Image (tube, rainbow, N blue to C red; front, side, top):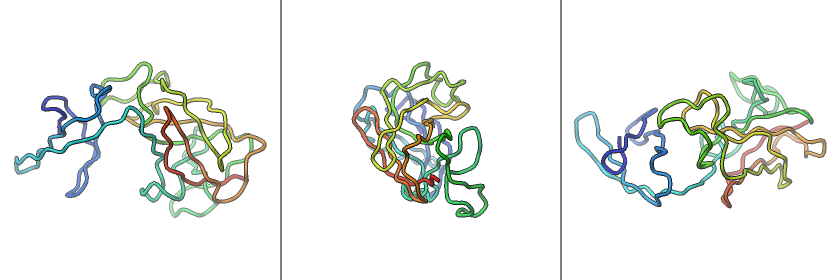
Amino acid sequence: MSFNGSIPAPLFAASPNQANIQIPWELQGLSSATLTATSTDGSTTTFPVPLSPIAPAIFSVNQQGTGQGLVTIANSSTLVAPPGSIDGATTRAASKGDFITIYCVGLGAVNNPPPTGAPAPDGSSTTLAPVSVLLNGVGVPVAYAGLSPGSVGMYQVNVQIPDNAPTGNAVALALSAGGATSNTVTIAIQ
């Protein structure tokens, strides 16, 4: 896969109807590009791809962008969800004062960007645009917003659950950056 005829697009997964790729950093500043896909039989197809400098999207457990968010208790693999609600996963509600990590894409340009296709360094690739997080529509201060260390093209946003946070098994969570707002997912807060 390549963009505009010569810019390689790292491919992470492919199926007959879907390809998961990283939009190369080299396309920053463009409003559109042409993606050329080459199949295993050698045939090629081109697709116009509209581009936006920022288009935040939070990952969700159902991979549809809705419902339970792919949000963990910081520095763990424990999902911030009602206990026992996701088969095969460790889950628990976040407590007030806990730090959580929100996994997402589309937060735009960063300081210290790694080469296209390379994992992010140690947390020094922070977003250039300010990022805001909302819990049931109430703003929460962001502790970190940038590329997720060790991952390619994935961002993370870290926040501390405030004392005045709403509680429940389906607290609405959204984020915004550069005037664009993400999808809304849910998390559990006790």
